[in-house]
Length: 136
Image (cartoon, rainbow, N blue to C red; front, top):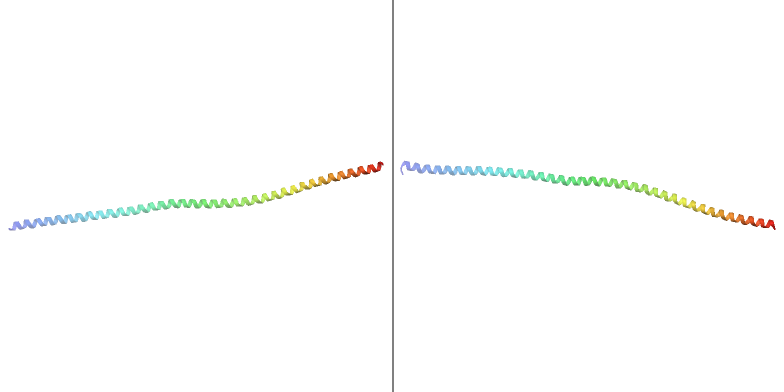
């Protein structure tokens, strides 16, 4: 109630007020630091997620690219095989035609040989008949 007492009372609230103000600033500072860490962690997570996504896309695209190359290679081989098959078919047809012609020629030779034997037999018969007539 005297001047000293009121200063004491007034000094104490100022100390309390300063402490509260200090706690408020400390809380605000820690909150900012926590927000900054959270933002940094968020940006880091986004960056790492993007990297993982890029790696996954590269892995998948690598397989797709390899499959595409293999598909093109197979298509080229199919075309080459189709050309080879066509060539072999033509060659086989030529061989069949040649074989058929040879068969026909052999049959004709066989027919000619048979005709020759018949002619020889007929000639022998005629010769024998002429000899018999001549001897009688």
